[in-house]
Image (cartoon, rainbow, N blue to C red):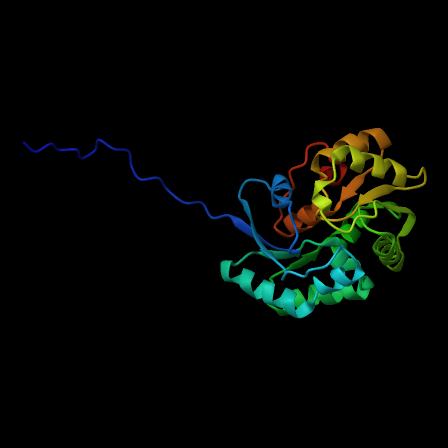
Length: 250
């Protein structure tokens, strides 16, 4: 006996829907891919790659190594195989270590390698401060003093005043810092005259502390992953997902 099953099954699903893509170049020790995804709205995918491994502690030397322009250009060329609309270099220290000119040169190298648009974390920070009309910045980092000082110098060179800068003195496994330690670090960095607080390092968990600390301090709290996601999404004409976060309200 032959059984006619025609019409007994639903039609094949349509799609898949085409997402807009953000190419992301992370340092080799990045452990917070999931945190970056938390800012992404529907219809946007992160296409993530990493810089080559260097066997060294987090330091000025490491920041210079992981921002080697030839290696960044190679990472961009790899990402362009999947055609992102923008490429983000998601590393604060690697994009501020050589000052404002270094950040601009890094962005130019990404564009020269084929990125349709380029964002760096430190460049995104400057855009966010401009968006918030914030001139005086309290700086909180997980770094040792030399690297924290470099960030303060970068801000000064960009016309922003670092009214304070404090660090945890860490040189490895930054992604393991508990939220309670991060909140206290932000409190120690804040000053009454600060227009905003910036929490540096894309490898320092921050998503859930932002709104909490903004309510406590009564001012914007910006973080490295937040500004990177915000700036990359802005290129796409999209808003980041971060309920209550002041940067994202505009």
